[in-house]
Length: 321
Image (cartoon, rainbow, N blue to C red; front, side):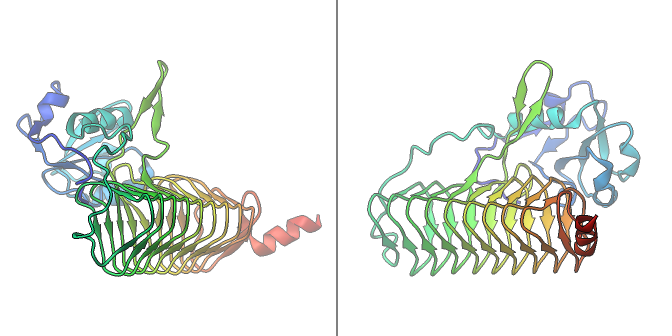
């Protein structure tokens, strides 16, 4: 995962953040990555037994975890044992990535350069930040803001009044009006003293042929990326929280909400006003009825409905009682 959207302070030694740790004093942190993407020069975190399968196979050099969870990590991984993982992780992020805990306005915004973007059509009052890339034959609607470093593919149609930041958009994507893409998610840690802001260094990845209707909000990832798979369609006013992964060929109706770090398979259909709780897995070829509340994992090829969502036959049976 690249974090080019955020200013990174290099050459931070683990001892500068955890001076009492007795291991790898000279370990220089290259990056902060999730368990399944971390490499030997990265630091990662492990805060729930739900992710033990990823922990067992992690290639991270150092992992922040707890006494109860350290047994799942490979012996080659150095462990920093803490009482509460997420506040310590936030401490690391704040040391390495500056200004990732607040979305500051992009002050580099200017009118698009006709010379640089000669094959792109722009409406009125469009503003673009530094190092923005937009592919040939794309159309950008009026009053849209595209912040620094954003990449937009070829043959895209970006409607009016959109704000796009910290994002990579594939070819032939349609983004209707008034969407907010790539802002910081609802990430904080409730501590006794006050709520502690959690930095978000991830991105939004929108793959090819996705269509996103008006008024949708897609948060960038915290450590990992938020991903919308190929040929997935979102209806109006869908909210997708940080780190959510949505597969290919999905159809998501209006006012559906996804809490953070949920993973949705391919060919999934979700009816309007349904909600999916955080850190859940929804399999492939699943259908979720409108207004349902998904509070546990759903296996492949299931049809569910209700609050909490249950198999459709069980839902009908319960209604007859």
